[in-house]
Length: 152
Image (cartoon, rainbow, N blue to C red; front, side, top):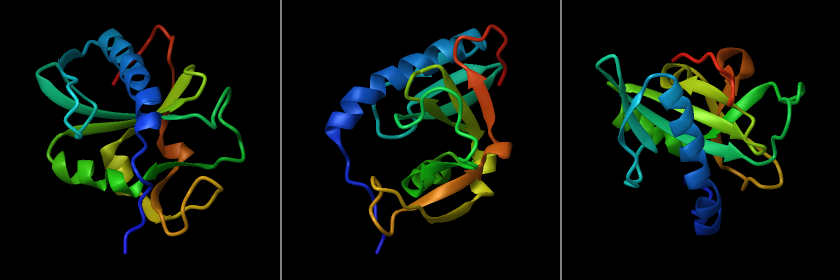
């Protein structure tokens, strides 16, 4: 049996627009043209840059504020996001984990996610048995949200 966190409309309402707005501003500065941001329960945003389509998925990690804690040696993305890896396997898919203070984010290409270990994670907010991708921080790209120089 697969354990998944139940969908929370409250958390979605709190974070979805904010995450998309942060991502749109970053991608716009990076030269992307927005193609689609309509809620379809697939990737959050679809963009185009230099003739290539990109798909973007963002979440906000409210427990993370300020610098990334040195004792957090990995980033965790829920395994339920596997559905996006399956759907966009022939496209450029990028995951973003945004800090709760909205100052920075981790950027993780799907190619990295696919190579990472999937296993349970535990803390007081995670149900026993729920699985996550465990991404070493050394494989992700840290981006300051208000930085001038950006690339993808």
